[in-house]
Image 1 (cartoon, rainbow, N blue to C red):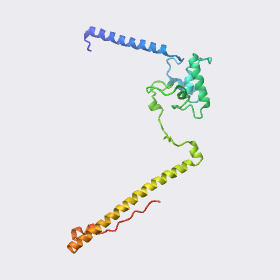
Image 2 (cartoon, helix red, strand yellow):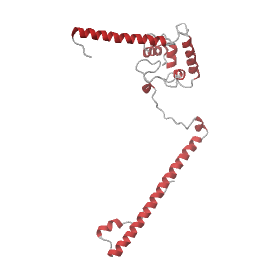
Image 3 (cartoon, rainbow, N blue to C red):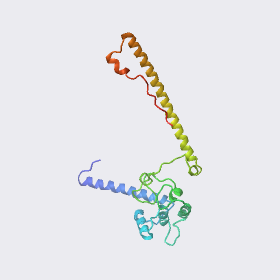
Image 4 (tube, one colour):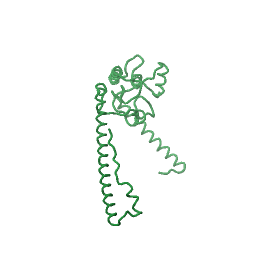
Length: 221
């Protein structure tokens, strides 16, 4: 769609206002659907987190940020729905065996509210997305658990894996030695045929018969 002259500008301005009004209306409808309100206002959580850190000297986790934006100054909750979730988050924080100041997908907020939306991370404000916030830095071993380290089964599992790899490698070496022996026998037979036919080994073929004894590769132990 193209706009020309004054009339075009007015049409463009009207179209933009109409689009803006639709966005405002949609946002208002979305706010009505929210069952859990907060007292965060327009202050971004990144700033709120910095202020809390400056006040307490400690880095607040997502759980503390959620509680701070869903409780009034007198300690009461903004509504019953928020109260229920906040109590669950507090319980998860008290029972946690990890550092709740560190943001993770499995912190108190993650446990209570579940998986994050792909476009944002709860309580962290604009710009935070799961793919960057929850970076996996440690490998996961699905078939190993803490008891494996305690009862020595981890060592036995490693030994078993090593034995299997060693067995497979030695089998490959056996196959290689068999192949080299067969090759040497074939070359000896060919050499015998040439001598019987020509009486001697031609100079141009001498190099290929320099060594007909196969070198056996030793097995690993």
